[in-house]
Image 1: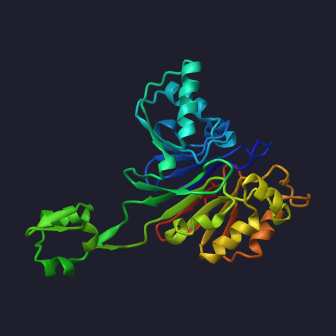
Image 2: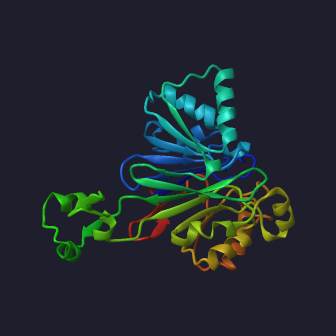
Image 3: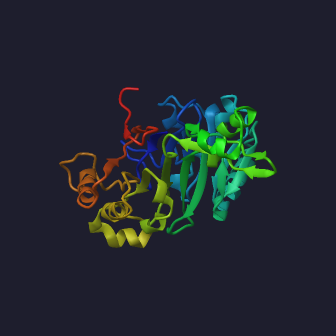
Length: 320
C-alpha cells in the first residue's frame, strides 16, 4: 500500500499546499482510492502517475468545501479522459444532494455510473483487494474516518489441519488457498481456518476532521498507520476545540496510548509557515508531537509518498 498526499493544507490552499486529498494506491497494479477531493485536486493528480481510469472509489470524510469542492471537476475530467467504468463514491448524504444539483445546474452528464454509498450509515465496503470500514468522528459537521485493510494476504495451506479433516490434496485445496469457503462431508468449512498467513493484513486509517482522536481507538487496534489532522499546536487548543479540530500533541498522545507504530499528521493551518526558522512554523507541530510520541512520525507535504510493505515497514518513497 502507498499513500500519496495531494493536499495538506486546512481550509484554504497556500502557495506550497493544496487543500485536502490523499491517494491510497493498492500494493499491486494501478488501482487507487481517493480520500477527500478539495478544490484543485484534479490539478494535483496531473503531477502524478495516477490515472482517473484506474480510480476505484472516492471517499469523502465530510461536507466542508476544502474536502469536496474538487469533486465535480474531477468527475468531469474523468469523463473527458474516456472513463466508462462505474465509480463508487462513499460520502455523507449531503454530498450526493450537492453533486446531483451541481450536475443538473451545469448540465454535467457522465458516461459512467456513480454508485453512491452513504457514510452516515457507517458502511463496510469490499473491493477486490481492499476492504473499507467507516468510523464516526467528532466535528462541526458529521465527519468520518475510513480504515483500509488488504483482503488478499499471502498464505500457505495448513496441511496438518487438512489431514485431520481428511481432506485429500485436490481441487478443494485450491479453493481454500484462494480464500473460498467449501463444503466437505456435510460441513461448511471456512478457508481462513485452514490458512497460515505470512504477515498481518496491512491496515491504514485515514481520518477526516476530528476533535476527539480517542474515537479512533477501535479503528487503530489492528492498524499500522494513522493519518490524522493536526490543524494547530497546543497553544491554539481552545481555538481547535471551538472549530472541531485537533492539535498535534493531542493526536500524538492518542497514538502513543494505543502504541500505534506510524503516525502521519496533515491538514495544517496556513498560519504555520514552511520555514522552520519562522514563527509559528510546521516545525512547531513536529516538535510538539515528538515530545509525546515514540513511533515513526511524518508531517505530510504535497506529493509526499509513503509505502507500507507486506512486512509492516513504513517508509518514504524516494525518486520513483
